[in-house]
Amino acid sequence: MSTEPATTPGSPPEDPSPFRDRGPVDEDLAAEILLEADLEILGRMPWSSNSTFLVDARRGDQLLQGVYKPGRGERSLHDFPPCLYRREAAAYELARYLGWNLVPPTVVRDGPLGEGSVQLLVPCDYDEHYFTLHDDPRRANELVRLAAFDMVANNTDRKSGHVLAGHDGQLWAVDNALCFHHQFKVRTVIWDFAGWPVPERLLDDLRRLVDKGVPEPLARLLNTLETDAVLARARALLEEAHLPADPSGRRIPWPLL
Image (cartoon, rainbow, N blue to C red; front, side):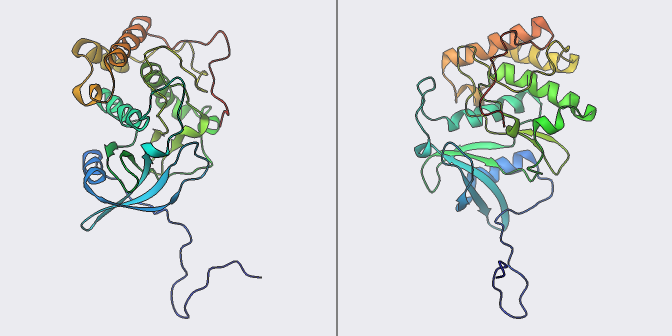
């Protein structure tokens, strides 16, 4: 029996996927559209521990797709306060301030299921992830930058599948909700670059963060202990100037992918 979707004679075949490809989009414009657009839920994203939805974000004739994570769909954690979606946006604000272009535009706003985060959907090859990319020398600089970012953001859940190779040729880091705890508790699969020097241009960006302090858009999303800890981690990485190692071998998330 055929599994092809039924179509009206003479009509084009129906696309069974709700995902749409797109060309490059300006980051500031994308954030503006995601914040102001009408959101329509297209379906639930698979393999997510919390409720995560694919949405159309439409503002007039402008249409983007996003990943919507409402607070009411979160599972409570003993070591993180509620409203994890705010940390998704905080990761974007930190990456944006540093100029590292790692996290897709992410905003906090009301939505069909209440307040949550909406992140620009990255068209990518979902068969690619950290473990398929880490030996590619063309990706080394991007992965070193991501490893440095995760140390400053204190990412406790950097799985391989959270590293995407976008159709735009860029490396993107998604699923950043478990970041910014004031206690150092990094868990990541990205240990292949332990001991590598942090490039001088990244040190300059960290120096600017330490000298000028946490920017207001990021500070709004965190508490005082967390903002102080961001600066302490940035200062430590700046002083060490090399990516740290994990001598315990235990600072990894599970599952790895």
